[in-house]
Amino acid sequence: MFHRKKSLTKNEILRRKRDIRRVFSASKRETAAGYTLLFRKNGLPRNQVLIITERGIKSAVKRNREKRITKEIYRLLKEILKVGFDIVLIAKVNKKKFTERFEEMRALFVKANLVVQ
Image (cartoon, rainbow, N blue to C red):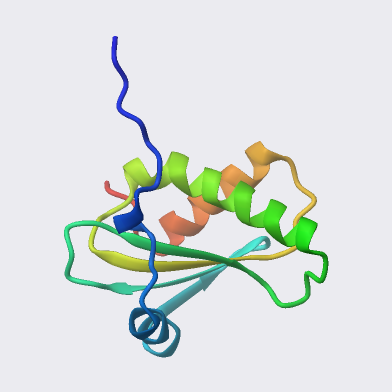
């Protein structure tokens, strides 16, 4: 059986400075222990995501690790999310295991009402 690849495509990554500014200035915000979620409607048939880390993470190795883990969790969850949103995920320093982080982010998306019922 062939499974479709669930990777993030170039079209799914929020890149334009104007769009990023819009999300930070006029968006809804939800927080959890390990993440802050900013989102707003974009009028497109897909979601666009930007994954960043909080400012307090000084080590590049730790910053990149947090971004890699957050990106992987989003990639696994994107199939259950509503479409048409610009999403910014701000990762905080997190010592939890992957499965705990996964459940935390899923609960955050449920709290923000971005999960398809």
